[in-house]
Length: 177
Image 1: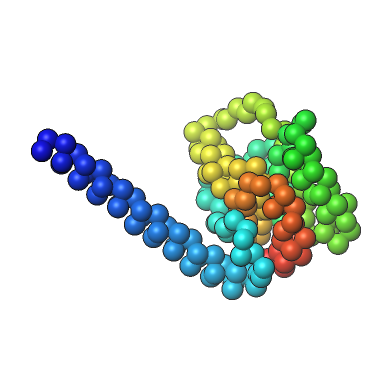
Image 2: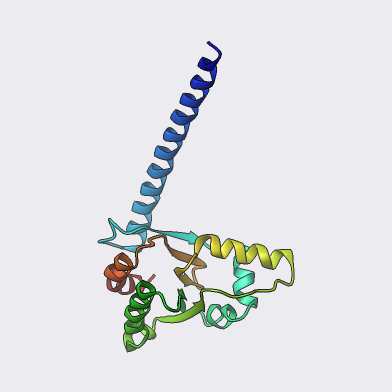
């Protein structure tokens, strides 16, 4: 009898977590459909992404911190990505990305900001750190920033082969975003 309340609590907790996860997935899919309709996107059914507004702190961070500020203040969409030296999967991804970076049509619409996979960053204030954290909570490794709309096309897909597969569709459809 003593173990019964603990089992009951565990079952209730599991049911709560399952319901919460279903609600999150429903909200994500509902938001995704709304985004696709607003942005006129198609063919992204199996691609994990979201469009998120930049917080005020993230905007201040991007406007004031090197190397981000030159890209953010250019008022042109920019792709932020991490280069991992010695990783063949990341190398294939970066090579595919370079095709767009060197393409006249796409380079007129996008700037490309390559970041090293490691590094040390100093922050002048807690607000600057909060801006950094807000930005990287959404853009962790690869994203597209639209400084005019103050939004991030956040790519949550972590498989490089999937990223490469959707790259052309993504760049062509986001040109007018």
